[in-house]
Length: 414
Ligand SMILES: [Zn+2]
Image 1 (cartoon, protein in one colour):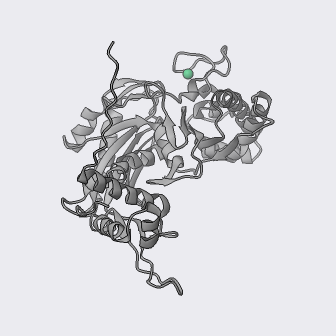
Image 2: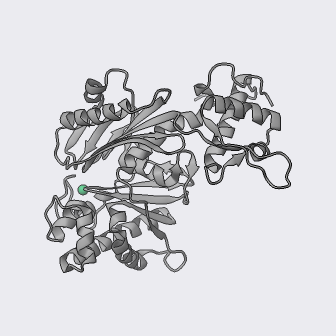
Image 3: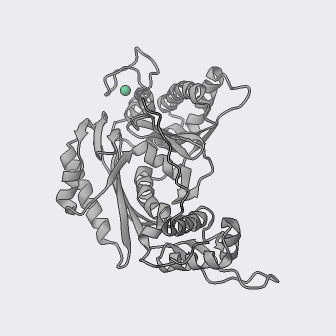
């Protein structure tokens, strides 16, 4: 077999250097600048190691192209020229996030600054539902929020969050046991309502929701770079981030924590196995164990736990121990320092974390050395839709040159 040659390209094209510098400036302002802590032009040049004139010309192009926004100049006492603060542009480029959950449909428009410009949420139980009906309904919700877009706003892309195994390259859902959907192509149903120009990628809902923890707004790193995110609703999913990068596995299917075994002889699961974590921690099971009707909400359960209802207290306690035993195995295997509980798990989090930590203490080899931090994600509805919009907006942050008009900032080589 011939030896493989590695080609090293040392040539730098004019276009590529300009594009790289535009990306560097954009990433820097998105990572560090917001309305409370805007990045000044002077600081930007220093921290990106560009000359003031180069940095300034590129910033002008990014402001003209509505990727950055300049706030009114502020004077810094005794420090010469006033500082011109920069932030990500508001209300210009927009990402569309769509979500099919087992318990909801959502459509959301988010701008580069992370503001939600329009939102449509429908709480409904889609267990065993008809994909055509659900996706057409989602299409109608999307159409309504797209109609709310202001003139001049640019839709940069769309992502659909799905609660199961997806084939990202073919934009298909392969299997979602709780929905009862197998091998679904969502495109024809959304196209029926939205027309052939609708174009979107797909992603797993736990992975997309985890993005809202990894980034508190587009391009802005969150407090933890290595963590496991768990999302609970009717099902339970997880996503893993190591140093800010997703661990998705060979096929992109990693994170199905809801189908890890708590008890091999436990209750039957919709996936075909027995005693999966979902059968202890999923919403339907929690409500059943608490003696509540299946249509009750997680907030109804929380109210009963707060009131000291013994069945409800015991249901959450038992779920916490089941979760703790599974998380101990995961942390023993992967050495993750932070565990973030989201969705339903965050709502009942104050009563869940105690049993989780107690159970992990017995089972973690590393327990005396380092205790994983168990924290709650902000309790926002449909974080998968927000993460999906972030993925769409990433196209602007990763390659801002593509969204600028031709010729802007082209003379910047240094
Ligand atoms: Zn299962």
